[in-house]
Image (cartoon, rainbow, N blue to C red):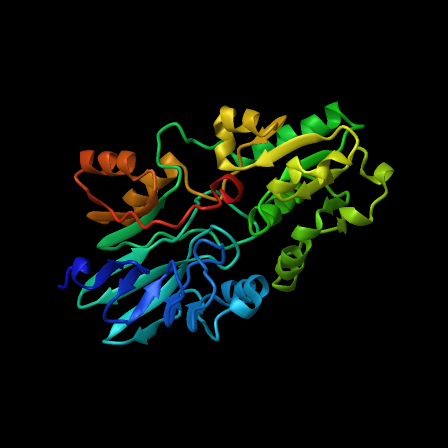
Length: 339
């Protein structure tokens, strides 16, 4: 059996599968790339050819425009493909955002799973994470500290709705990343019984429309820019986190500012940004989920691409699992907004 260290290499461009002749989530433009999901720190512009889920390719096309790949090859979950020197590859749901996928690679008797970003909490807008038993598991570690134990998202939505009931005259403006977090919040609100219109900052509208075109129903969404000031009194408004601090939010009448992110568990971050209602809703695995996932995939060796790798590698070592920090720089650039 060929150990994965002999055929999966860390290069300046990112993780490179030698026998397949392609990179996974490369950090700069390359000839051939496999992309786990369409967030900007994983789906860079300028690749010639990209293999990814159909939804990821559609989102990349919408977000990157002229920087989208010249050639896109969609691959369905579980659909097997042979690449290069007899590498077998398939994609498995990662549960991060719509279209997100883990990359499974088999070569000469060994199997590697590259997780990309993932979460284990349920999300009505994307396929749930599926663990795959492997020899090496390549994982993220965004929230790999014991302090990060995220509450159930339904509890955070209940806190939001309770605040709206307590302050019925104030609009609630929730900062959320445009891809994944926005649509998940809308779906969670609908599941909690919120059937009224949800008003959106213009920057959030295109991806919501794309999600709906891909089969994710989001209900009554309206552009906030078209609303009279009175229409937004007591309303629910979603906006990019950057909009919370600019004139766009200040034109609302005494809004309650909220931000949905796993980083809102760190109260100093919320206070520093003037957030009145921090919502701990993350699209990444927390400490318990990371460790549970490692147990589920039963890999004797775990490589960590980015994040807080030291604590995770220490915890793995206590369980007899070899940990390796890849230290791939360039991921998590949008940590305050996308997490």
